[in-house]
Image: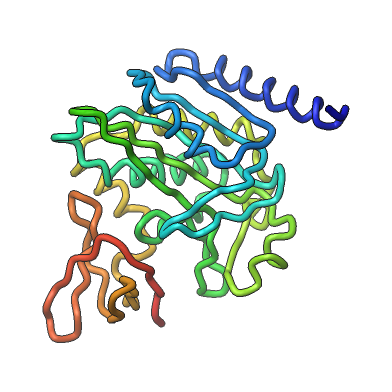
Length: 268
């Protein structure tokens, strides 16, 4: 193994140890920080056989097989993003699993606000965006996956948050992306992870309270949007978020439609 590889491994291990100490008292279990992995979500899903009551965390400096919503590839350069997943235990019969990704998105926005980035908003369902000249640019994406074990669901929620652009705009030439470095001086990656995980630990779990928090940070509500569900396309007014996290769209003729999944375009 090369010297540079050993240095990367040690650096990641030390960041994980530092984060574990800072989060003492916040009910987190194992926190693993890796120099490189395929997917932080998959790392935790593969451990779903070991059901723990305390949330586990995996963070990586680099991912080789990161995924986004609708099975898209998540692209990031090494050490240019916070790549983090958290596993949470839920009651499969009563808990609304769809709300866990909302909870992480709200925690991330609140932590970023505290760290000096108050302009971050949420684009439904759970993209974090910033506005440049009236257009939304993606700062972060969130993906939730789950495994059902009898009455227990292990929900793994992953976050990919761009800290610096690095080579992203050359790679994603047809997409509008942004990074914290464009908005100000980025925080240390350990500070960033700590802030988000603390907000996640103390955030509202009640569905109505969580939806109210989400709506406060929403960029989508109150705007006209184009919707692509994969099966059809239509336009309408984004009216409200339901207690399960779906979006209510009102068409020009006054009828309302509920969507659970799809791509949105904010219309002028």
